Length: 494
DNA sequence: TAAAATCGCCAAACAATGAG
DNA sequence: CTCATTGTTTGGCGATTTTA
Image 1: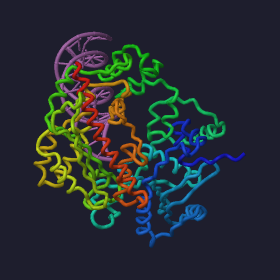
Image 2: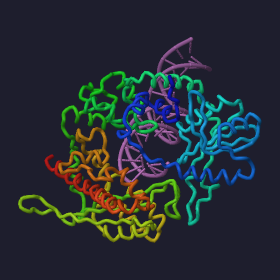
Image 3: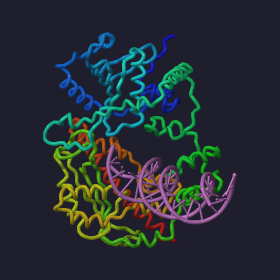
């Protein structure tokens, strides 16, 4: 019988959760959420960097045989993008350098600091190398220097790439564990039975599992994992209690006030409305604005004069209610206006973004936002365009964070412990389903936005995707309007 | 009485959350 | 990834109390 060789993806699937590996092997691809990798461009940069540095010094080897014989005979070389395997493991290596009898190992990651799971990856690669050679191995990560400033030219790789040596961190890990893991993984693969692993923090760490929902179909609607801000202690206590349903929880002291409120609301199937909500909802000044920004974030250059991972504002959406509502045929109706800005052409939108926004929000009235994201972006813009700093500060002072108000003064069992605008919107009566073809979440929106701006979308689909994105952005601020109306109406009965 | 244990307070460190 | 915010845990430090 031929054992399936373990590769990196299988190994780390299992490390996260044995059930995840089972699903990887047994569920059809269509049920899986395949995300496009962000890594290729950085790999290309790395190859370019190594070629430029070592092409004239050392031979560049590509196949396993040459690599093995060169190391055995102490001949320097470098090698990019190759595969190494023994009878159990098959791994892909980004880059390697062999000089002074030392193997230098490199893994490329579009990130800015070395994370624990990257170190584990290096450790696995090192383990396989140790199977072939006794040489000293030094481990490195090729990351991105977040302080690098893109200019008109191609990035200066000496500055842009951040090569970090992690040998010590890798050596602090236990490599006996790998051997054990491998035999366990083989057992899991061979038995091919669904493991009955319970849900837990591993479902999101280090990455949110593709099968997150698969493991939750038969669980109580109000599972204790939905209780937010759980401390380590609380997690342990809940585990020890062995109660998974919030409704069955006994009264306990060690919950925070927010947690207690949520539990009470779930148990009574009743929303929570604070006494002060009414006053707060009556304290805002017309005209009312509802504002949302869309930004793009990328490790790579999109516009000159930006840094890696710096959010670049490209689009805003603004609903407004100019005056107090009037009664129309018995219904309390307010006229809502809509205004927006966007630029998908590939030119830097930042100046126009702020200039148009300043005009549109005028000089008075409360501006509702959700989270402080918009404020933070505005502060950055103010640094960039000091001539607008004063006007921007005035806008910031008019901002009201509906997230903060909601979290403190309102709860509905359907929030399921989450105060994100998406879960909060679920209680609003109007049809709020995100049911567009291309854009159905904030994630989709930012991905699509960046694809539009960097012109990665073919012209056939472009029009439709633009429309979807615009509709999505409009819906997002409309959700904010509806949330405002909802909070106002529930507080009026108090 | 001196050393050890305990307490209270504060600041620093850490973790979780939201947005994109 | 970032960054602000909020809440929690941790560590330091002196003062007080307990113990041998």
